[in-house]
Image (tube, rainbow, N blue to C red; front, side, top):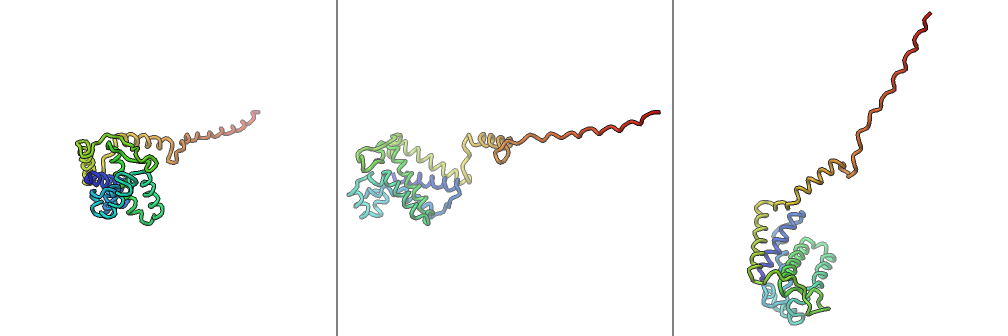
Length: 205
């Protein structure tokens, strides 16, 4: 479902941009949503396919649905475009993030993905834990949407359960080893001054 891909792609980009200090604005968010819809351009009845129907129909007639646009070749193509056009990474990165979330979602359905296309066109890889349009998909998307909204209003997500203990361990290690990671040397032992030579006693007589 297009709405599922939009929510998951948008939520993923929102999370990554907030965690890693990348630009989050309406344009980048739109690029992530466009990327989340892009793989289904090979289906003329899809949301994106209806917007560019002549192109979608041509791709569908040549490659079929869930063909090249859902393969590892498409992923490699996205990465190549990002490498060759680094000046546009502000839009390309969210687009690719959205694209990958779409493929990840399809991988979790019984239909799977033809990752090795065109080597083994009929061989699909799948981890069928979600049913397209079923309750499991609706539950997963609802949880993702709630997760995104909670991060939006709380100005960030709560830390993972193991983050605080791990930070405590790191802080204790830094205290013991020092900022540079080198064990602190023991405090220097004060050098005892040699006792002053006793003055010669005067001889009696």
